[in-house]
Amino acid sequence: MLPKRRRARVRSPTGDAASSTPPSTRFPGVAIYLVEPRMGRSRRSFLTRLARSKGFRVLDACSSEATHVVMEQTSAEEAVSWQERRMTAAPPGCTPPALLDISWLTESLAAGQPVPVECRHRLEVTGPRKGPLSPAWMPTYACQRPTPLTHHNTSLSEALETLAEAAGFEGSEGRLLTFCRAASVLKALPSPVTTLSQLQGLPHLGEHSSRVVQELLELGVCKEVERVRCSERYQTMKVRRAGFRPAPGMSYPGNDSTVHTMYGEASRGS
Image (cartoon, rainbow, N blue to C red; front, side, top):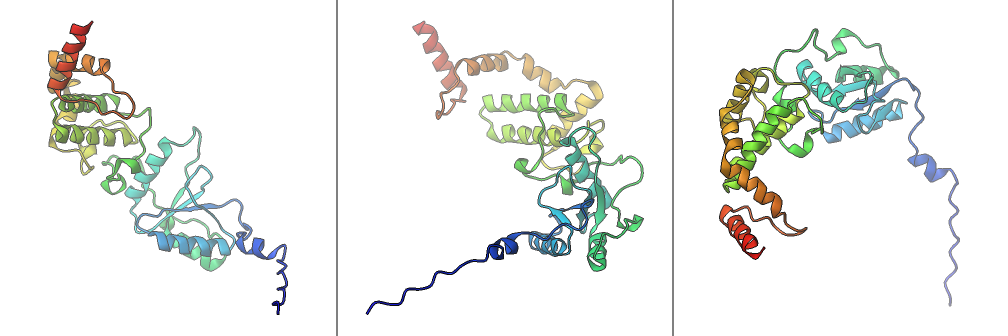
């Protein structure tokens, strides 16, 4: 006996689509972005769903559309540091959003509409900020930091990269990594470094790198960097490295004796 043929379910043309479509935005002039650090991913997701269910527009990523940036357990200095880094990559003429404490969002959700922004809601410092960039808002990992092609501290980062390159020629991987990390942090700063106190508390800026930066700020040159650049060994290694670039998938022989052997064999064969 053959089983009865099941009747095919007919889906409602609006059923599933309606369930996956977010509620319409009731306040088109307000675009909220919730900053995840200090708030946590799960709490941010919960507040995003709750706000959207009440008709608020909540952005998944920070963009120039954001009008209100909401943070939790964040000081005004940390908030301004976060905004300064964001504004370096923003298009020209972009109006910065209001930096607000979480209390503004909770009050708005309770009222069912955006409440007026008061001074107690704002996370903004009055007057220009002269203190150092907060280390809490300078990520430790380079992949989390903005590294624009054009930055404010070119001379400082190039000096540290010169020392890193020289350390690589010597086979000192530790010093190479140290100087590269310090240069990467300088590239991510939102403004030019004018005093050494601006670097206080920032990651990967140790005693040696700070000493190099201090000499450059006070004297305009660093004796150690200039000595490396003028050394015959450094110049020779740069020429040899340029002449023996590895093919894709091959490692570069960074050892000086290996490069010297290759250079000699190439000279004899020519």
